Image (tube, rainbow, N blue to C red; front, side, top):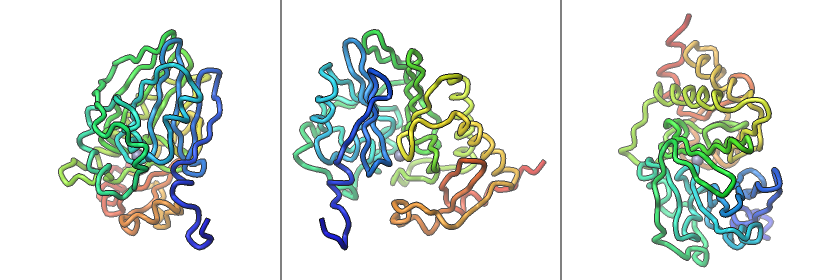
Length: 288
Ligand SMILES: [Zn+2]
């Protein structure tokens, strides 16, 4: 290891560890413990939610955990969730994947060429209400309204009381600025904040006592109370009572060229990263 540069990317992006959430569900962690991939085993098939950055050999790692055929799906089409897709022949994606596809290009995230076995892998679009049958275990797909991005899917496992939230609800912060790298992608700040609220209300209708809320970064599972805090945050933005902080306190996002334009907006235990110029357009506009 080079002491000055820190650990090589391979070690950060491609070093997987796993543990069981229950007998048939694994959390696979990478990015030094800050990011997660989920593996849900049924009687006939196993569902893999996300494929990471494409570093290391996730497929070999997964095949040590399960001997069932693996169905692969993306929570959304961002490079830290979908850049490893090409290790598999087919991946289930959201209808919005094409809008966020430019975020996967540009070589910002070099991938391990030995892991790209199927560079032309098949993308199969799934829709709200579709059910992935794993054999004695069913996982329902929900299409999230665009808040973190344009391509988020939620996955609901009612039998195991598990709600997989992707990057739409995090304990640390949810990223709400445009990260599609697509100049044609729609971005309207009032709509984004409204969608965050609508998504939280929809999740709230589904989850309850004993449910696991499972995001993909910075801690999992997290309290369902975060959903209430996100709803409160959207109200506090319009009321002008949410706290706006210029300091991000996030070592990866601070490396992003967009970082100087971003701020953290906080309410209760939750917060969002968003462009300050954007949030000020609606901040305090609906004072009661
Ligand atoms: Zn994301």
